[in-house]
Image 1: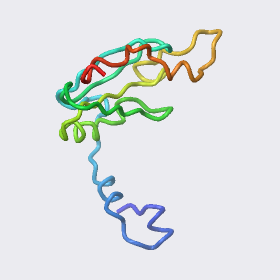
Image 2: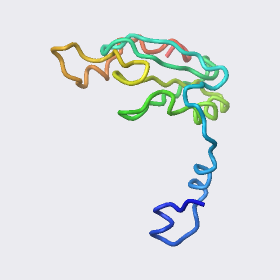
Image 3: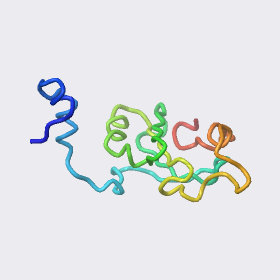
Image 4: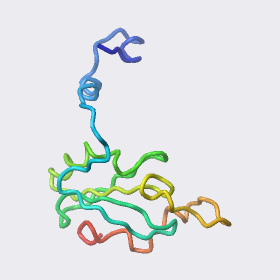
Length: 129
C-alpha cells in the first residue's frame, strides 16, 4: 500500500478523498463517457476541439483544463455533473491535444484576447448559451 507525502509528514490516516483517488481504476482517457458529443468551434486562436455531455437544455457547466491539460481530464467528473441535470462542456486549449494546430499567427503572441473572446461562437451545445 502506497503512503502519501501527507501521511508521512503528519503520521495520520489517509483522508477520504485520498482514498477515493487511489481506488480509481486505470483507464484509457481517450475513451469518452457514453452519450458524449464532440464538436469543434472557432475561437480567435483557431479551431478548438470540445465535448458536451448531458441534457443540452440544462444549465451549462464549463470545465476548463489547466495549461497542459485537455478536455479528457474530466471524463470521470463530467458524467457525475451531467447526471445531476447539467450540460457539461469542456474543450482543449489552443495548442493542446486535438486543438494542437490552434494558436496565434506567427507574428502574434499568446495573449488575453486570444482566450477571452469567442465572438459568440463558443455556445450552442448547451441551452444555446
